[in-house]
Image (cartoon, rainbow, N blue to C red; front, side):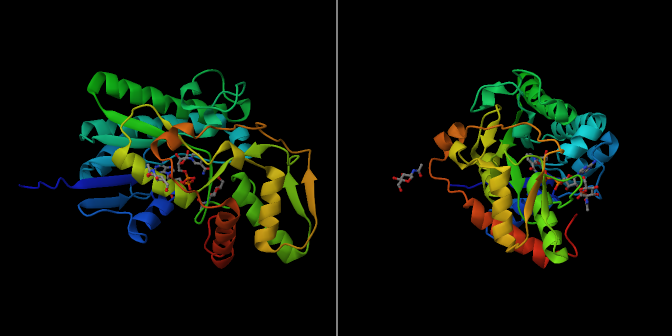
Length: 322
Ligand SMILES: NC(=O)c1ccc[n+]([C@@H]2O[C@H](COP(=O)([O-])OP(=O)(O)OC[C@H]3O[C@@H](n4cnc5c(N)ncnc54)[C@H](OP(=O)(O)O)[C@@H]3O)[C@@H](O)[C@H]2O)c1
Ligand SMILES: *[C@@H]1O[C@H](CO)[C@@H](O)[C@H](O)[C@H]1NC(C)=O
Ligand SMILES: *[C@@H]1O[C@H](CO)[C@@H](O)[C@H](O)[C@H]1NC(C)=O
């Protein structure tokens, strides 16, 4: 028998970000990469994917067979509320360029990244994969949400017109090492970690923005990275798949703040600034589809993942993005 090994050349856009660094870690440090696979991780320094010529050039240079497409303009609630137009346009450009350039160089599979925060605001719970386009998103982030939803339109159309298996995953809130710990414009968990770190150092109270009652499902970036590898190699649907912990693992912002306080050993007072917006109250997602494929996937317990993330942040405070 002759075994023909087809090399799999995987290009990861947004390879320098939170999720990209987690995939690098799993591929390079935890033996997640397989023989015959070549992995390349891009950052915005390699190409500005908002520009089609730069996108084509970097794809022609690396000639990928597979792409994990993570590059995006991302940010937390407060940045979204300020610059919806930028979120819409920048992400639309990036996604159209990446998917079209992928098609042109013959990429057989693209796994792009949506988010559970793009789902309709008025909905029934739990949210599942069939409900993405069922109504307007929360008004706070409509620019980002509509741009992300259009990836699903791209994917269906590339399949219909060109037979391409371009698909997308839908993670809930991601956290982990190498996150952007920006307080003003970042996501809730890394922002809380950074604020608690500073409050601890300055002996001041930790001020949590909002009421603390909204509920979120958080996924650890390294768990998400392992699931990305499975999707890339084994998931063969064009329809997206939610990558999330279970509905029972949803936590309130107050519970998340308490966990940060415990992980950092913060001794001060915690106060809630209810003059700040809460965002969508909840977006509980179902991971039933994922569990049908991978009934035994085991997620890192939230408190353990959060402790590891806080330890990373403290150890890398000077160089961490913030
Ligand atoms: N974080 C979350 O909670 C969350 C939740 C659900 C879905 N997602 C999705 O997951 C994906 C990865 O997010 P993340 O949290 O890892 O983001 P991140 O840490 O902010 O990283 C963003 C990545 O995109 C790259 N990038 C941004 N603009 C670019 C451009 N114009 N051209 C080329 N590259 C560009 C950045 O490159 P530089 O490092 O060079 O700037 C970086 O590698 C995104 O699609 C996001 O929408 C994230
Ligand atoms: C999941 O675990 C159970 C019990 O350990 C085992 O019997 C089953 O075969 C596993 N299923 C899959 C799909 O790996
Ligand atoms: C972190 O995120 C903030 C808000 O989006 C941004 O202003 C800052 O440039 C980011 N830092 C890095 C190093 O990417």
